[in-house]
Image (cartoon, rainbow, N blue to C red; front, side, top):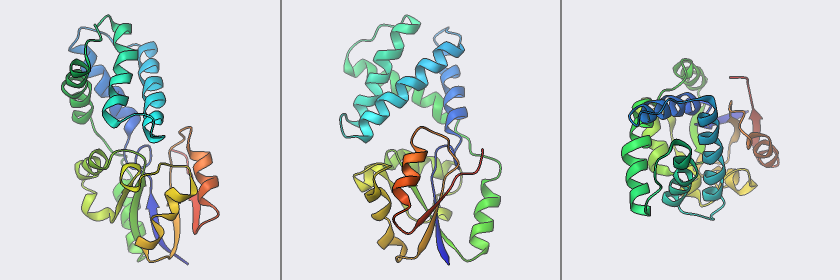
Amino acid sequence: MVSAVVFDLDGTLFDHSSSARRGLRQWLAGLDVVLTNELASAWFEAEERHVTSWREGVVSWAEQRRRRLRDFLPLIGVPVGTADDLDEAFVAGYLLAYERNWAGYDDVDAALNAVHGCGVVTAMLTNGAQEQQEAKLAHLGLLGRMGPVFTAEGLGVAKPPFTWFARTWPCLQGGRCTWATITRSTSWQPALRAARPCIWTGSVPDR
């Protein structure tokens, strides 16, 4: 019997792709730059590349942001500048616009109500920085409802290694769990393979 459902966040409850694209458009508009499909692709490719480096422990959270801007700013004719310049540009530019456009999916409340209505506890297991992921949940009104929030930063390991899943088990009393993810990111298939030897079953409905 399943006693806990552990949700992923980005692409599952939180619509990162749409939020990021709207934020990117808003940030670029302030720089008199029109967002094109080519620029959007370049932004998300840089995000995937450098956030992956952060998850693997190669760079810090702040440095992955700087590297994304170093790749992207020349494409829009903006000087790269120093590390401090990049930090300011990211926080006051893209990040501010991204946060203003945060949004979840319309069916999240119904999904959580259905799970809780079955007497099943919930938790969050997500790659990302603890503060930012909790802020997303708070923005969606889910932080108090979700239960424990486990992140790559807090656990010291990112998906898909098996230990990413196993470290949450004691916090959920060792019950049988389902990991609920809807995202079709590049990491979902290896993550499911890593989860299966444990107490988990992977669920990947279409979004």
